[in-house]
Image (tube, rainbow, N blue to C red; front, side, top):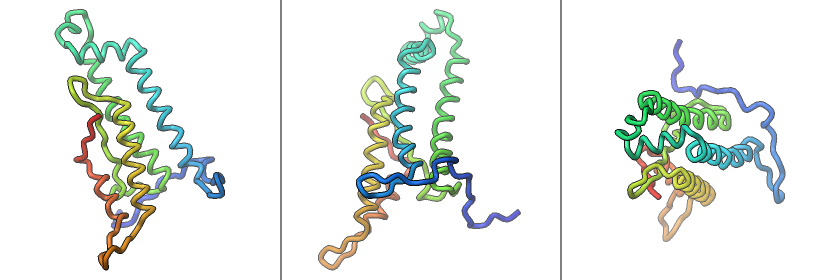
Length: 174
């Protein structure tokens, strides 16, 4: 079976294939769904980490592993579950994106950017990572909207600048 350079098409999102008119322009239903879904996932993740026993144990074990172990916390199970959540999240995001584009291509322009929040003593700021992801998305949309510009006889392609934000080496700290 030779797949070659052709795109692999995934299933489109069922029931969200149309468009909604907002301010005289058509916006895809699935894009609007993803815009709403982002803050919902942020809120659920925040609730999971701040309002559940599991989140309390994760924070405690992160701050002082020895004390958590002395209190009887099964750290192997705890950190395995954190690892599983950390691996599931980008996979789910990539699947959501492929349902939007209809493509399972993993080329340089179709990578899901990795954004990590943090800074100071506390690493992993979820709101910081969310804010960084929104900023990257807005900058990408702005650059695509500008397109090609010619200044003083020199052509600049702002659309190509979006390839920089797809690099997995980006690290944003807030």
